[in-house]
Image 1 (cartoon, protein in one colour):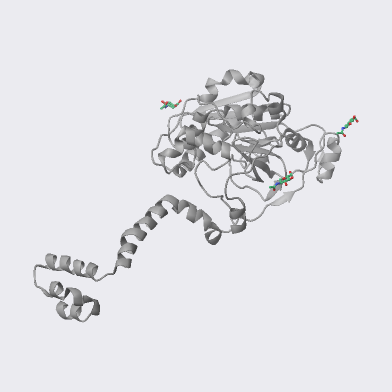
Image 2 (cartoon, rainbow, N blue to C red):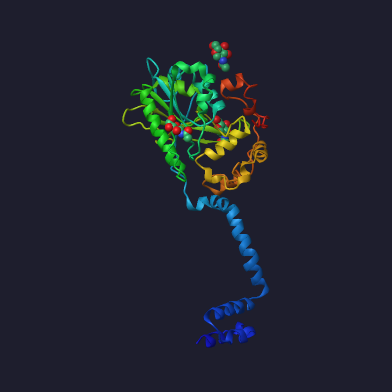
Length: 387
Ligand SMILES: *[C@@H]1O[C@H](CO)[C@@H](O)[C@H](O)[C@H]1NC(C)=O
Ligand SMILES: *[C@@H]1O[C@H](CO)[C@@H](O)[C@H](O)[C@H]1NC(C)=O
Ligand SMILES: *[C@@H]1O[C@H](CO)[C@@H](O)[C@H](O)[C@H]1NC(C)=O
C-alpha cells in the first residue's frame, strides 16, 4: 500500500530506493522523513530553517507591539465622554464661575477628602498635597507592605512622614498587610487595597455630600478645580477629571486624555473607591497626570516591578539603570511599547519619542516655588540621581 502511494508521487523519484525499502516501522518513518526532506529544494530549506525561526523569534520579541499596532482592528474605543467646558480665571468671582458652568453658588463650601493608595511617589505626593492644601479637609492615605504585584515593600510614607508635617493634623493614615499571593493578577491586590481605603474613609469621618477625590497619587487636580467644585451647587454626583498627561516630568507632554481621576459627592452605601470609569461626564483641563515622575533611577525600577503591568517588563535589560536614564532623556517608552490608541492615525501620530516641551506655564504652584528642589520635573533636567 504505502509503496504504491509514494511511488505515485512525482517528487519521490529521487529517493525511490529509500522509500521503497522494507524495515521496522520506526526506521521506515525516519527514512520517509529523509526522503521528504530530500525532495525539497533549497528555497524551501531557507524558508523552513531560516525564515520560520527568525519569524517566530521576531514574534517573541515584538508580538506585543504587533498586537498593539493591530488594536484598532480588535478593539473599538470606549464610548466618548460628555466633556464639560471648564471656565477659570483668577480675577473672576466664584459666583460668576459657578454660573458659567450652569451651577449655583453655595453659602459655604463642601468639605473635601483626598484619598490615595500610596506606593513610592514621595515627591509627587508632596506637590499634590501642597497644591490642594487650602481646600482639603482630610487627607486619607493607605499604604501596604506589598506592591500590587506581591513584592514586599517598605512603608515609604511612614519613613517620610516628617516631610508632611504641614498636614499632620488633617491626616488619616492607614497600613494594610499584603496578602503575598504569588502569580496572582495584580488587579486583585489593587482591588483589595481599595476596599480597605473605603473603610479608612469612614474612619476619617466622611459624610454625605462631602467631596471625595478618587485618583492615583500622580493624578493631581488643580487647586482651582477643587475650589470650584466645593463652592458650586448642582454639580454632577460623579465627575471625571480630564488631566494633562505627562511622562517622566513636565518636559514631556503627551496629550490631554487622562480621565481616570474623579470627584464624587459622597453617598454612604453608594460611593465605593474605584479607578475606572464611573460616569459619562468629564470636566476639561482640570489638572495634571505625571506618570513615572521620579527623582531617582531606583524609583523607576521599583515602580516598573511594582506596577500592575509588570508583565510589560519582558526582558531583564529593561531594568538596567543606564538604559532607563537614556529612555528618560529621549522621552521614549520604558517598556518599548507602542502607543495605546484606538485608531491607526493616532498610533502613527504618536510613534517615536515624545517631543520636548519647554512650557512650564500653568504648573502646580508649589513646584515652581520650589524649583530648585524639584528641578528634575522641569524642562531641560532629564538626568536623574542614582541613589
Ligand atoms: C486682577 O484684578 C486686579 C484688581 O482688580 C488687577 O489689578 C489685575 O490687573 C487683574 N489681573 C488680571 C490678570 O487681569
Ligand atoms: C505586612 O504587614 C502585616 C500587617 O502589618 C504583617 O502582619 C506582616 O508580617 C507584614 N509582612 C511583611 C512581609 O513585612
Ligand atoms: C491640550 O489642551 C490645551 C488646552 O488646555 C491645548 O492648548 C492643547 O492644544 C491640547 N493639546 C493636545 C495635544 O490636545
